[in-house]
Length: 592
Image (cartoon, rainbow, N blue to C red):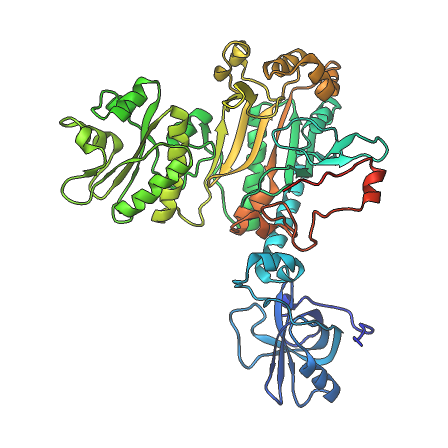
């Protein structure tokens, strides 16, 4: 039978026991036990760190015997005098002291865990996620979860200080198109009807601005039914804000203040303000990405003018048909990118939709050019000069339609930089991306889709092109990027109901569809709406980067895996027919 806690009350956390001469009571998990015969050392662990408990021949025999019976992960409490250690351990905060325990209670025994509870663990991740409650006992994950909590508190404090009101919005809402698939919740009362879990609180926070709450903040849970990756989970948290009577600069400056506070208070790092800005067009032209990693160079060079009359037909034809020839130059990379490695990169770009990869590799006296035999006299020298290439460099060239060239070179730029090891660690490069395109062309449907949600305000000078030239319409939208990861997306919202209806119409929605999906929002605008805008910052992604974690699972207590299942509780799971019948639902088994 386990001991009870009667007469013991914790006075200190393990990691806080640093001064000799005091009597303390601690509780935690047994990390390790070393039984030397006449002396026993138990390292006790809690979320603040570890401390050593000591038992010897002067200990009460019953207490000594109890200490000898302890095993890893037993839950215990101990009381005793803090003494200076004979053998100091400088690797831990409590390494100069130990607790000579005169009372020990075993509160819970533990089976041998399926993996060791140690910091540096190489165990299969699926096993760790199946026993997530054990995985979470490890110090690295506990530090991450604690830092995430600090980020949330610091964000709340910052916005409270700046006059924001925290307001909760509904978790069960009407299903409206927001870019990803909704998670649907069936209604028992209204059979055949469904709630949706919110992809974001977008419509509700705009309605709060209509209601007169001019500064709203919420740490909002959001849900999106989409394919997962390292920086994506089906459920996530946004630091969500909305402000009235503002323009884009006001919102961006408010968020910059939050970033400065987070990095300063939590990481003790100063972030220079204001943050740099690039338009979407400039970011794509220079980096081939709307979320560029600017910690290294290797920017894209447009070779179209240089090669438009090239003897190499692939280049000339691409430019002649309105496309582009672009390149990136990997400095001092000829040793890394051998012909074999270049072949691998060629297969890589083919996998993302490019027909081929041309290259120039300069190792010896003369450059080795994959298309050299097609070039006229002096043509290679012009290309090398335009690319800024010198001996020891490798130039990668792609010819195709402009969007394909830019996006593929952007992806190749990141892959090449990782192989070269030129991305600096411990550096935080923040960047605003502004003037986002309002529409993007969907080649499958032949229609123009909203690049952001349909409540985004077009730039004033672009409204005239809504019906005639969608490609010329840019939005009052902005993204915050850090080291190649999008942290947040924001915009100024449409508040004129006539313009909102015109925008819906430009997206191909009929009046009946507008009324069915967004009628209540359009109606609200008819009663007077203050100009407003806002954004949502990904708390999970901020935590991931600040913790130096590899993926969101390392900063999420109970994460989902790539197929959106949670291995520990084995969800999602089937429910019985009776539960489905109450909801008016019947499942259909899919045939293999």
